[in-house]
View 1: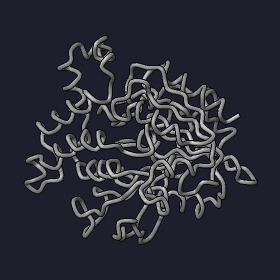
View 2: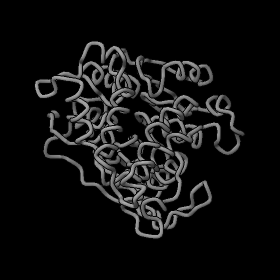
View 3: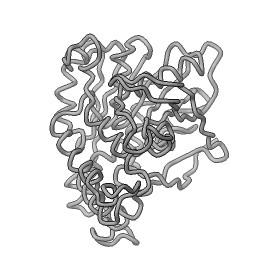
View 4: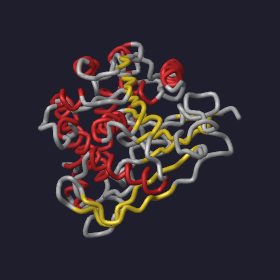
Length: 359
């Protein structure tokens, strides 16, 4: 069955609804994997932890056709629709596809859905390694899978793909990090801080409400609009649509789609992103180069040529230490958004590359 375009409103990094591709008549039901009380690497225990996931296709008899796609910042289990379908790289007729959501997604355990005493600002800090460990338990305990065909992820999903390959080096054949690196470097920390400070200092939140103000949403829109697209995208004014004729209209539309009811989720995920470094994995002593050199899976590394969130220079640095690497930058002016299939050209390039890697 061919895939068709269905409109699914997802808050992506730019804050705008994105038209994703999903299988007509086969949109999956989400499930919650129960972790129980889950020990976090920072020392806290997440009470009654949960991981939201969906699956496509069927697990084969020897459990050898499973592919994992972990979510990215502000994304959910709909975020990889541009890769999943009979005419796309991940065909449910051949692959068993598991899509998971990060902690603080609003679906998995999050500040917005966890009861006191861990609700909202009292939710514990979580790491990328915590997310990988929780997903490992899902894959192992729920499905009895002892080996994955691939781990594929965009942005924070790419961070998880790298972490999977460092923590569980023999558990997968292939990782595909797309528009994301194995560490958040200092520029990324600073850039993220400018956005997270907007939320944490918003007058609505400081007054004790679980919402962000109208002015705060507008400021957030300015940040994401500037950083998620390339400067060339803006020079060519590719944001223009019949209903979005100006920069001001684009920013207003972006601010309108920002869900004000989950600001603490965005803070927790942002801090998770900010602190990530595969070098901090046990046994590597903070050495990102040694951690990358330990990867045994094949790596199809696809940075965006014009990404300002995860600059290609960071990826160029990391590639020097990764064995068994195919380094394949996405030729695009979509910036970071290329990793989520922003244009038809981006989608075609990513699908073709993954299809080849899975042969």
